Image (cartoon, rainbow, N blue to C red; front, side, top):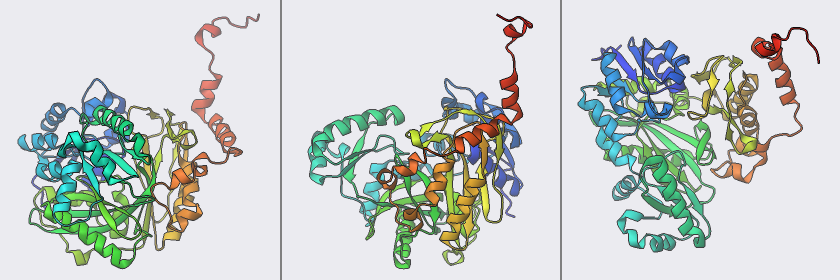
Length: 491
């Protein structure tokens, strides 16, 4: 085991990714520290960490975005390094700079790389200058006065996107150019609200595209490798639901071209640590979409087929070590699929759901991995992203993996909060998915997958099961104090 220059790492995050990082820190013999808002006081990540430091904010999310509080907590924990996880401040260049200025090792790329690749317009221009393919587009800040006319000239269909965006927020598909001006106004308003940055660009919308991404790793000595691609085409509202590797849509030759392009982009950007280069694929060729300068939610499928712990590699790279393997050492073994278990109701437009988790039992078995940050008794609220857990499975073939994932979903028991589990099982058993024919608009074209079976007896069975649990039974049998004071009086 490598001798690291720090013995404690603070995790500036929460939920399943915090738990995931703690597990690797334990394996490396490192102490874990975590910051938490009071709504997370009883969560799994807080209970697992060696040190837990409370932070506050106007809202729970505001607390996790408070740079000064997080750096102060890192010093309080005597942590020599900080891991940002994903989301929150993970791709905030100011945060990375302040962490490093405070003498703390930032477990991520250099701030310069975050600044370059975190701005979608700068990243796109950089990639194009270096000879890699991008979709035809128009950038507002090149000449704001002519943006609308230049956008029209690209031609419909168009995709309006915020420069500083992510997670599908602020994005609009425009098929009728007469509605372009309204779409731009709506996208700008949403981008300003979510990111504090209303800059936009438009690009030609590729109909029925596949969403592919390549995991890369770089060190401070200029070595960059890829860990193959992931297919992330099953999406709702531009947000991923199911990810897998290898992609069923690529030939061996196209896979090599895609992975080589990702390594070339990362190398040109002098990229260090873990990152993901994302592309859209039209079935004939691929085009650069963006680069995420952090660990991805779906990193586990890559770990399953390569056997490489990406969090450990992040920590080693941040500590200044050389990569411990060459490209030829990285081998794909079998197939892996990840599904995101979320507190949401697909049949009601993926509306977020809430409730207290009364019963929780995850599936087990060879090749089944659960990344989760929730506990029985925990209350699920709308304060954060609806992701509850990730179920990742691995088998020799894609069909076997899909079948195993479907069984795992059906074996899952989670009572007290409505989830998308039934939808995930339907998706995994869908003919189009099994044939590898999905694309980013597949769910829009097949709304019945989200709607489910209205005649299902499952809700009744779940209600009956819930009534058999002690917390629900006790609550149902409880007599309010005011009524109890009346004794046996009847009207």
